[in-house]
Image (cartoon, rainbow, N blue to C red; front, side, top):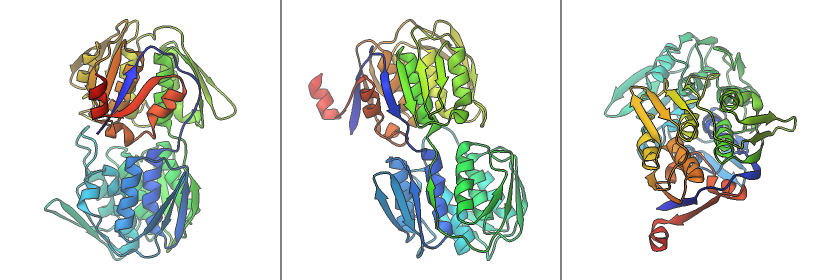
Length: 425
């Protein structure tokens, strides 16, 4: 096992590049199952979750190869419609193969998915949508099986604009007969990116980025090449890092439009954020941030995946803040770890009340999930003394060598094994 050792107090500076979006890469890789032949997906980050998804596709008979910045998937021969339990339980996004396999093969059998323990995240929206398209669904013994000779277009209303359910239903609908209407659909940029990839394969998807998707089914699709959008959550994390350390940082390869709610809250906290024409953002901060209130919402609202990082920011603010989590019911597990570093946070249901402190202190802390881990790293960047962050495999699920990017920007951070960390004490 590895840990991150951080000595705080150094302002970040220089220039860092944001990688391709994990949350766009995973459904696009799954969508490559829809067409026989070889698809190429570029600017895919090297992450544990991406490795897991590639493993899922390989287990189904696809030939998957990786280059430094791309994934190639040859889905000519699909020999199985049942990904292994050990892969599906490792990552919830594995469930995204359900729509493509059902649409192309007429049958799929998947274990109930796993992933970060941040809430129940029920799959009923996925199943209701697929059933509306004509799938027969059986559940039992932790398995879900869906069958359909050919899916048929239908009107699907989403009780909640779930990103995963929108993507799964959209991927199934592109090969269904007739027209599918997905109402109250998720509007996230990652959904738009998936729709663009599907359209490059020959699908007919309209309305991506709005709350109504119109999908005219086609009889077959062709493989395609696609460049994944930049990761807005990584970009937001780096923006918060620059603000917390009172640094000056140029963040390259971003889509400013995707970052509007983050930029707005940083500016409200007193951070200078400049959007540049070259696809970069410049972040500068020289004092303690002001307190801000945040409520997580589906896009275009404030993203739940940046809630923990902003809690780290508000923990050193010059005022009080309230953060309300509306998307997941169990996404405050980082609170107790931040408290170990001196943060003053009280929880009341889905709301967290934060009283900003002048400083934090280094401590031994543990990542409980992906974004919580990022928040602890950010807290370590400003804490006095040394912070040791364990269970960093959570961070590796969503950030490609985050510590290397931070180190290039001036942070005193290094990755070592647990035994090396014990010897250093």
